Image (cartoon, rainbow, N blue to C red; front, side, top):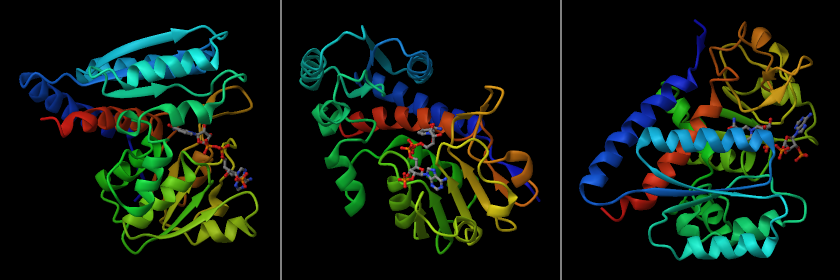
Length: 281
Ligand code: NAP
């Protein structure tokens, strides 16, 4: 029987759990706080930042907002990060990407102290993930693991195919599935016979950024399909990498876009902010 994985509902469950935890922390005098930095006026980034601030409010997390003009220099941004790194009242620092072209994104994300890197992009956190030690995990792949677990999907021993090998989605996704004892293949633009590779998957993660690329021909009967894509179709409407109407005829479970992975990314960001103060309580 086919089931839609409701990311909105599951993300609300997680945020409700965090809200209760934050209340308990506040009773001990600990107020988790997130500094959110937005540079420039990219409308999509402004929406993401607004949603993150709304989620903070929902969970009782204090959010500090830094909205800087597009003309901000790299040095000014690095100075702000340095200030936030040493501010004991700030537990997490998030710089909304992409940054304007004159700013080196890697230099900026590397400048965030690993203990406040709630996006999990710092090389120290990425390395910790790889060797299985404590650290912040990139929110989108962490959210997908939570979606699978809370939907009753057992990852252990399953054939997992991740399509896409970016540093923020594909690669950490592969490592997390491996950590859950999945048998993992990471496919990409040079993969030969992509359809055949995808059809091996019990769990297929689509993360390539191509609207409705994956149709039923890429999917094994009964597979669980997770659509990470946030794309625009020919009419400018938000859609995923998966052709929902086609794939729902074959998959046993499928995430919609919107309402699948997107809300989970924000919920896991909130979890990382709370995680940054858990050791203090
Ligand atoms: P990215 O950095 O552009 O990486 C895309 C990956 O897909 C690359 O590894 C690329 O392979 C691979 N690829 C591209 N075309 C392919 C093809 N035809 N066949 C096989 N592989 C192909 O993208 P990203 O940042 O990982 O994001 C992927 C999608 O997820 C985007 O739609 C993005 O908007 C979305 N996203 C959503 C969330 C969320 O919260 N829902 C979060 C992050 C990203 P090569 O490495 O060989 O070039």
